[in-house]
Image (cartoon, rainbow, N blue to C red):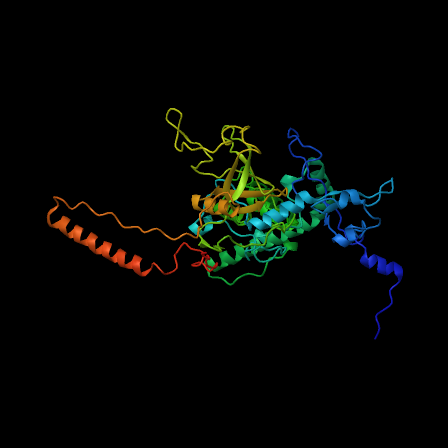
Length: 485
């Protein structure tokens, strides 16, 4: 059976990218008017899809769109990636720009092999075990859920309702008019159902205490207006219970602790079940999956295998640039793979702790951390280790850095040709120094004899292994032998 005939217009639409491009995202909202923002700066997250084309098509200016692009701006570049701002303008041209900023940042991020974890507020307490203090992956089954009103729904990141703390005054007023007020009658019916259940439970408990049979189930239609009014007044005083009912009815994202809660233990337990268990209660839920699709690593508990030195105890450090020195209590800012991160916390070379009369606990403070380094070409740089990363609700990628070990730094420098550790020379003969046994009595005599035995053993080993492979030679690592002429 032959293939189904397709019209020329249909075949063109199938091969065209015009109808396959998603709608661009909206510009991020400005929350701090005092913060300076340049119109040409790199956005905190990409807004348009990145397009690329093979070399054979780029030489013709073909990018799969309506019209060909100029070769001068699209062919003579090492990063052939563009973003389409406007497909058709009034001048009958396609407005496009380079998308190398976000695309290369994504490649660098994936090259560093960083795991994505849930955000955790600074100074979080109430952790019952040490395992809860470890960063939790966003791909854990108890956290990676978008089920609405399902099992574990209070830990989900996707809600039908908005996060009220993120809305402006105009958006909040519009939400009240279009979403909240039309559901007022449904919410009152829900409250009557809850009141009927409470009355049924109270009557059943009283009958059980009195040794009588349980009465019939109390119906919402039997509630008098006076009883319902008193119930509403009690709910207004119990803000935690009212908050739980409204949030569950409108499916709102959890907020922080409501102001002025001084209620019973049951109300406090209700609040803990709603807000405390959700990792986005204080910062707000993200607009997408908590990983943002930039990394799918579940943990960083893996070993890197070096081709010569074998498994490494620490991850390969990354060379970071000091962007902003430390000012007062604020930590220094580092640029790591196209992302800005704070300096590693703790008492290390990145944080000078003052003790006594201007003394520091670590005298060797890295250049450019305390003050701007204008002498080093390209700015001050330092090796750091990226442990994990999180994505905040605004779309910013927050890296967590820690100090790298000196051994890992040397291995990383050797990989770039800045240092040399490995060599193919023969190991030199080494004999342990003899202990001074003079005037030591029997103990010194025994130590002297033990040193002689050790010396004889080493002599035998060196003579027997003179023709064997040396440990530090290239032949011992399977890299081939060195030919001698």
